[in-house]
Image (cartoon, rainbow, N blue to C red; front, side, top):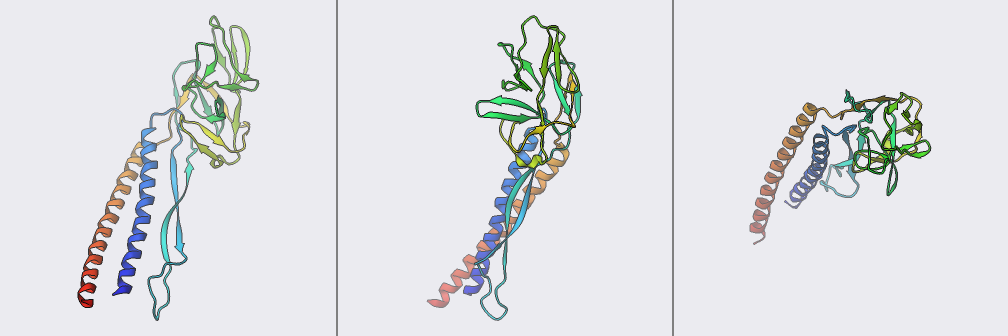
Length: 252
């Protein structure tokens, strides 16, 4: 009877580990769906691994110990595939054709972004949607109020009616998975290298690469898996209560 109780307890712990992982997966899917219309957003996927419990046992007698496998949400990876390029006609909008990133200056230091919905703030500084200065190879870019005919070529070189303004600083990463996603559609970390295979497209933005149909399907699958495990755990709990009641009756 005691051995059976231990087995049920192990089953509940294994189920709970899977539920925790599914909860984390649901958070990732929900974040992807919430950013379906975020310019330059890259979806995420969660990776799981099997964790073998080195101590817990569910058999004590002739057949020896059986290893118990738990679910561990190991890491989250970025899906860096390109989103669709959409023409906007706005000369300050830029899309990146390739694996590069724009560089912006934040209070916490330089950060990387694929969001090219740019604008000029009241001080004449070229900034991203959240107001962070977009960096050129020489630093922030500034424009006078009377400058017109802003042009950005495929290399990121910017000119206006006042002449050459500089070149957008573009970076690439040997392994984009080394970067860490932050808020405001920004990334940090990794080892930035000068971009060699990225082309700038003026008057366009890159849409999110999130597939709404795929993410909704995944959300339904995760929800059903969670509910299924919850039902199993409830039955296990009922069996354990029954077993404890019977054990108490035998000892009385």
